[in-house]
Image (cartoon, rainbow, N blue to C red; front, side, top):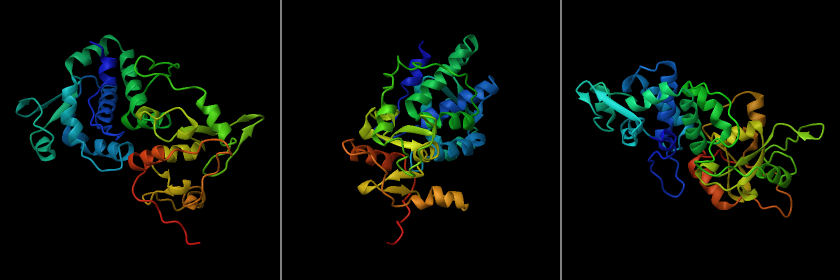
Amino acid sequence: MDWLERAAKLRQWSRSGTRAPHKPLLFLYALGCFQRDADGELRYSAVEDDLRRLLAEYGPPNRTTPAYPFHHLVSDGVWEVRTDRGPGSPGSGVRELREIGAAGRLTPELRAALRREPSLLGRMARVLLDLNFPPSLHGDLCEAVGLELEPTGNGQFSAVRGRRDPRMREQVLTAYEYRCAFCGYDGRIGAVPVGLEAAHVRWWAFDGPDGVDNGLCLCSLHHKLFDKGVLGIGDSHRILVSQRFVGHSPAAREHVIALVGRPLIGPQPGASPVAAVHRSWHTSQVFHGSPRPAPAA
């Protein structure tokens, strides 16, 4: 049984690039729990709040219930659910999952495979991360679910999906003249840029191409905020800031809130700006809530 393939091919609702990472998030959470307690199980009423927070932070902008993946992950052959009445999930109803003591854990076959081959856990986790989330969020997400993964080399997922184009970073940074498109930061150590990254607008995990018209040169801070849905790109390539973002310090006001309505810096003439189709995907699938109104002229 190819467990990596199962991790890569979780059945998820999909339409026109819509994100539905509910099952991958629960699976990652379950792997983290297995790493800490291989024989433990996850009672729905005890983990509901944790799963809800994960969905709120790493899921799509629309609110969803953790009961959905708790029930539906069973169909992928990696997860089982039992209740006080016996084996089997009662469905995706929140009240019933709570009231009849629904509890889930990895299937016996998967638990046995993870015991026989300890490195399998890390490889499965990396498949789930790579195919569902941008690299800028991997570390935070592992911390959120309690996963400790060993470093790995490039090419880990070449059998699941083609590798990223290593030329994209240089192409995007060159197009934006080595400046953050949001704040203009252009730091270097000698001749080497530092703290600048090539961000996918439409995530690579969701068929975002490795091209300049799907990329932005961003500093590390604004890359993270862009991938977390705090920042976005609106019409006329002006910066959006989510109304859900709260920051009272001078730094938060200067580096985030003050960006509202500013035009992107770059790209240089002759380079492709971010394509409308990729901007629209990010706005609908990543950006959280409504944008703050631009200040009056």
